[in-house]
Image (cartoon, rainbow, N blue to C red; front, side, top):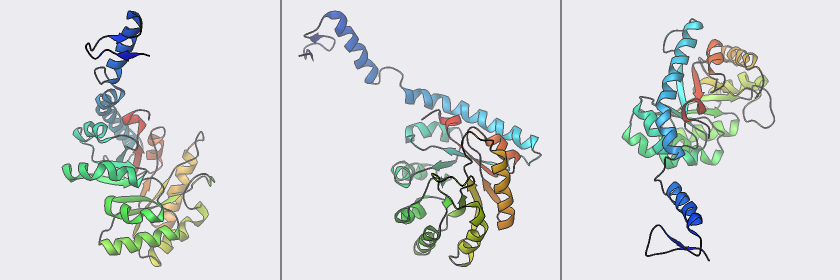
Length: 261
């Protein structure tokens, strides 16, 4: 049986010296004495953030949009507070999360430390999480059915809190994705306003993967005009510059800032 000798931190009983050296290497590697992936991501994230900001500014100019007219939502899902802090230190204050429960574990403390944080929910919302979502998030981008609209309206009244709201449109009519069908989007926005008393300020979409996103962004912009909403949340790490050309007012960028998950 292989075991480490308690009398010496560098020896292992029951194996040859060269095997012991291999085990010692892995002990060092996993003990934090070597550079970890998290450390690397934290170190690189501010530079990546700077590059994304530069790209957004360039896309604004090329689209003849006003400087600063596009909000960058840094998508921090699956990344812990230690990996978010360097991005906060670089001045980023708008973040997006996919899951209510994950966000509850890290953002209350960060929001207490940085009161000007604006937190967006960009993942599907279940009705049993509406209360927690209203309590934590400043913007909820995934309103997509009447049940959710009713629950949000109820919780907003109870909590006297009014997160800004977007309707998510399943812009490619994909069965595996959340969102209201494009053909129903304008009528649904009207119901949210008239029946549920919700002030819908924008639309959000995720185009089909591996397809030209331009036509889908153009469709969302058309729906926004028809529904009389002013804000468009569209564009992610691979296509945010294209989204800006089609009128995005906010882009949701994760891996281009934090690296691959």
